[in-house]
Image (cartoon, rainbow, N blue to C red; front, side, top):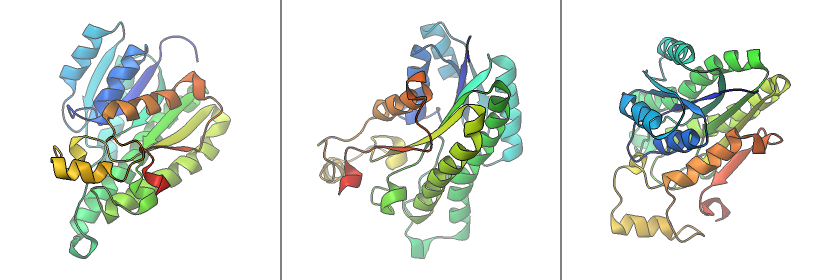
Length: 250
């Protein structure tokens, strides 16, 4: 695909989040940015436009609401150059033990972390297939592979495992349209989804399980996502890239 291209980034509102870091990194690489979050991202859109020679536009929607998602992406598509990529980053955590889990909490996590990824991806894919080009990257988690172990528990792990399954299935279905579909599985990253700022004791406990001897930062994941959205990854699809400091090696 030639000419100006747009990447949609979900979940970019958190000041310390992977979504914000990814949006800023992609903008620095020349992508036009569509921001989609349940919280307003207009300030970030303005920051991107001021700092980089790209366009940016923000839309507000709860990704667990399919109708709202479709309306928001319609708005982004109308305001920006053609869609070429999607970074599914929006998500919610859940530290509730399984035997204390309510049905409402189960559905809250699954609806956002799995159904929401499906709703956004389905709408964006409809546009990508028209161009015969596209890059889709969704954020899973090492929790999907380890059954938890960082902060969130069962419903989070189940949803993030579903993201890996969705990634593989879509890689097969969308490949004939020139679209690659991959996932990134972060380990413990120093963001608010870990339950807020980490105490020294908790930080030390998390780092103790890592081979890198340091906790991950949002930019670590942003660079992994940016690589999989770039033209340097054209022969990679259906893959889950672990960016976890070696956590899954244990």
